[in-house]
Image (cartoon, rainbow, N blue to C red):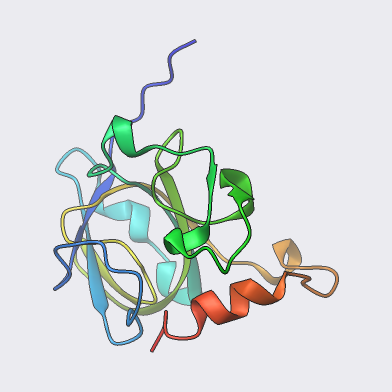
Length: 152
């Protein structure tokens, strides 16, 4: 079965290459595609955070992996792709929870989106408390080490 998705928006920001760290200062504009009406953003500012679903369009098929050491670091375990958030994924789907800063016309401005300039956006959903984590988040120690400079 083929699934065909069309971008609903595009990311505009200062990042042109996928770098693993220092995303915290990046402010991204998400601009609607021409075929999407402005009304999709009605009441968007009633929410402080959004989930952004995007497509890693720069990933080459030959770079897709199913397991490996995160960031190629042999000090980290060999982890299956579904146990990490690497961009080189089988379906090249990205997901990020962002802070909504502003809505202006056909654009929203967000913080904490780790997508580079030109990235196609597939969907935007509001973050609602009721869909949040119900129990304590558990993760291996290597994740905290890997992420220490990500949002710096």
